[in-house]
Amino acid sequence: MRVAHLSLTNFRNYAGAEVPLAAGPNLFVGRNGQGKTNLVESLGYLSTLGSHRVSSDQAMIRQGADAAIIRARVEHAGRELLIEVQLNRSTPNRAQINRSVVKPRDLPRYFSSVLFAPEDLALVRGEPGVRRRFLDQLLVQRTPRLAGVLADYDRVLKQRNSLLKSARASGVKAGQLSTLEIWDDRLVALGSEIIDARLDLIARLSEPLTRAYRSVAGEDHAPRLHPQLSILGADAEDGGVSTGTGVSPGSTSSGGSTGSGFREALARLRRKELDRGMTLAGPHRDDVLFELNALPAKGYASHGESWSFALALKLASAELLRRDSSTGDPVLILDDVFAELDQSRRRMLAAAVHDYEQVLITAAVLDDVPDELTAHTVRIEAGAVVDG
Image (cartoon, rainbow, N blue to C red; front, side, top):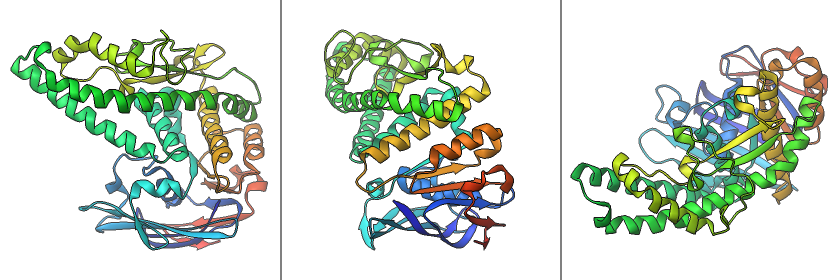
């Protein structure tokens, strides 16, 4: 899959932009703050329904405008699709495929990309929520229907938390909360599906992660991913750590199903949940432990090792997507990456991405990017494409 043409209206600092793109590498060059990242951010949004820079869609709408439009013409195997999304300030977002209205959450079915940026160092060094978001975005890209499961889980979680807070305020006893059991059933059903999907994804990432890390670091530091499940006693949000190793989708460490383990955890934590007015077990409190050389990457890995781990995670994600996809490779996006690498790692990264159908790169300095990735260079200045 490749993007043949990108069109933006009132997106970030672009009043309007028309950007033709080529197969293979495409390099956007310009001084910092000119709008290079805005271009690739727009394409990242089409495949993940989110930005790698901000949590709100509103920030991507140009100041003074009521809406922003991202429109991309993509091609694969001689077939063209026109993908469009309109981000609105005061009404729900709208999306179209070939001018036919679709739900915005369906967009990942039609377009796939993997974006790596300096902010992704937070995957290794940041909070558990960053890692959960990474896993869930990749899950939706591989299995789009899970977007609905994740949204439903969030709604049930909010309802259950609201009930727990009300019970805490009114002093209701645990045994008097029959309504809570109804929400428990929905929470367990949806949450178990998410947990199992994440466990399966973590297992599938293992082998491509090892190869990707070696390809960008030049060494094998034994990168590993270990799930940390709150239903088994780990609570990432309270700083708890559990090895969580050996857990397979559909089962807990005791051999029972994920659903039964989840239900047992809720029963065990019922009094504490009532005291705190919040749900204390489930995929919203899980984490993944990243290891290098059998030590936690967070706290032990150097800056270079952390950078290589985060980059390897994204390359491993791209490898999984290209294996699964019937529409070709995901579009690989490298946002301001080469400035952080020495000459040796620049060459290794260029070699690792050279065979993708399309690679989009941003850089402030042309000389930071290996020559083999500069065949199609587009210069950006003050929210305008000045040449290509």
